[in-house]
Image (cartoon, rainbow, N blue to C red):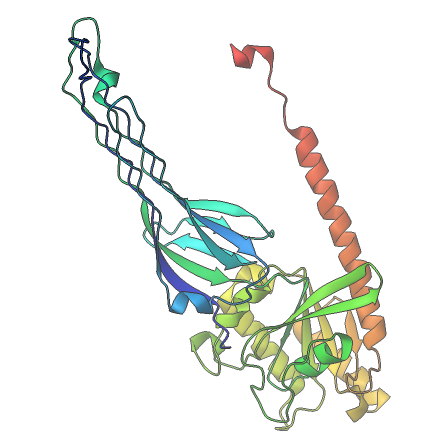
Length: 359
């Protein structure tokens, strides 16, 4: 199935039902008075996150989602039925943006999470609502209000702890297949990865993290060269970027020069992504001597000013992969603990409402 990570849809909530104008007409009951009921509320449109989908491909075929209209009120003070809501399932990691205002209306991160993106119209009022001591036979009603309409841009941003970054043929697919059960396409030509792949790395029971592999970047990607930078959005949620650098590129180019150009393209896309925590990983270690490895690492440090962790691995022989994955797991566990502590602090700092606030 083709991987689709963008879609545009139209959501239309149901209109509210109209109020009814009616008077009670029964034998032996003169001047029965008004008995027109209210209409029903219109149905709303919700996005619901599900783990049964992994692309937005379904939205290529169905682009308009319409909730039911509320029923009109009827005589004998009968209220119209509420319109059924429209539930639109979307993959985990979907971000919905209003195309007219640019407002982000939903960010779906939890299975079962449901967000209203178009509110149904309010019900109309029947003539019973307008009776009074001076107006005992009102002929006034109120129609239901229209439901909201929105044009939405859906973007899928995969949920992963670690993102792989590098030039084509840097060994990203080989690495993810070596440390997880993911089986992306691996070949000796550029752009074998055409869409994001996810792999779960399990260190031991109950200790695991998720890696995202995206198509490689090349010089000029920010201007549309190669596959462009359209898949970089999938790295936005990651905690760490693993910058994989091929020790011996098949085209004979300078690996350090490639690294400099890639970081430039990353910054062109997003300063936030460029400033994310980044670990450097030299791949295809078995093609260099130990002395050449040290020279390459020193040159990288000097030219990029990189002061973060640096690793050297050979994914095919799995040399150095266990140490790298163990260190990543420890870093992720610290990050998760920090996130929990932040949530507890925010909950504790929320002021309790005082008695005066309720007056």
